Length: 268
Image (cartoon, rainbow, N blue to C red; front, side, top):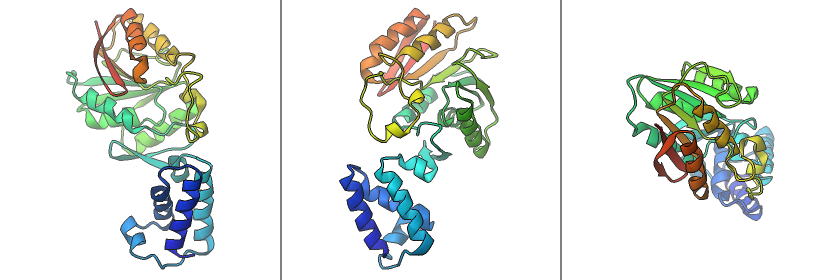
């Protein structure tokens, strides 16, 4: 099969499966398989794909036809311009979460900023914070030890020196932090998710009836902290913003600002 024929057929199949990025996904799968850039592929439509190469890329195509996230198939994704290892133990970092880094960088932070990445998943947020905020120190927290393995793998790849805590939110925190980054599961239990998200760990997606159960627990923990963090950055859907603000205020934090899916609360 020629490159052009594969791309045309793969695109048609993915479109038939309801995947809106059909052409792009077909190109990405073939780029990865051949180790070639897109311009190389598109300038050589008549080159033949055969043998193990064709079998391998077709196997990956079948996974994508089942709506498996492209990041799982590739074993990697990009966040804030950097590459991160991804597998089905963690959620794929969403582009909207990059706003958390932008808001973090706009805050007035101490010379050395101690940051906790709570519910760290792949570690993309904490690692990016470490690399973008001068003299930052970051610890990673997650309730799933396998998830922490992914975060540690990515931290090592980006030469980030950190600590990792198998913990129910900040329950086992050995110290106070200047900033808490908390992209916790916030999807309400009955909320309809897309087919790709069904391949991701549900424990990292759903946050109880209204989606805010884990944020209630986190802010409850912080309310008993001897030294409250200066800032807590959260992610939620816009319609949850008012409820999340009430939760934060009841724990002694005031609303600072928000942008898109991200909220910033300031310790009082």
